[in-house]
Image 1 (tube, one colour):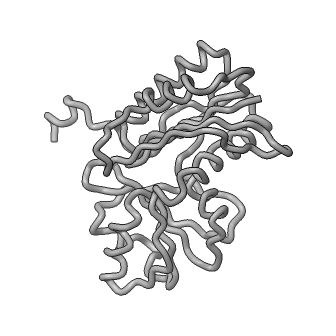
Image 2 (cartoon, helix red, strand yellow):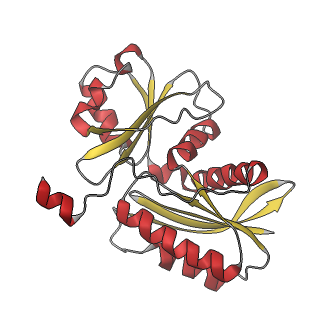
Length: 233
C-alpha cells in the first residue's frame, strides 16, 4: 500500500510517495521546491511529476498540511488534493502543519530546549507557537505576531535555551540573539524536508487509526485578507 504526502503552506513545498516497510512508512520518491530558488514550481507540478514517474497502485490515503501558512498555497494545494482524492478513490487526511513541525523536532532529538515554531504569514508577520519539547503531544496554541515583536511573546523571557524551527527560523533566531536570548539552534525548512514528509504521514496514520471523520478545514488563524477587507482598512 502506498501513501501520498503533500505540504505546501510556506516557503517550502513538498510531495512524496511512501510505502510501508517493516510496519513503518518509508519515503520512496519525492519532489521539493523552495521559494529562494529561481525555478518556480506549483504544488500540482510537483505532484504530477511524481505521478508520472511512479506507478501508484492501491493508494491508502493522501496526507496534506492544512496550514497555517499562505492562504493561496493552502487553498490551491487542498483543491488539487481533493481532486486527486476523488479521482483515485483515496481518503484525504488533513494535518495541522505546526503539529507536523512539533513531530519533526522530536525526530531531530531536540532535548532540554524550548521549541519556538515560526512560520511566515506572508503579511510581514509570523505564525508562532512556544512548545515544551518534553511533552508528548503538541499544545495547539498558535498566534500571530509582527516579526519584530516576537521577542515580547508571553513567557518567552523565562526560557534560556530555545530551538527555533520553521521557514522564518533564521530571521527569528537573529532577532532573538540580538535581543539577548540564548538560541540553542535554528532549524531551517530545507534541513528537514524528508523528515517533514515522514512526520506528516505518521500523524495521518494516527488520525486514520483513531478517527474516520477527517478534518479538511484550512487552518488560517485569521480571516484571509480579501479585497473587501482591504478597502475597509
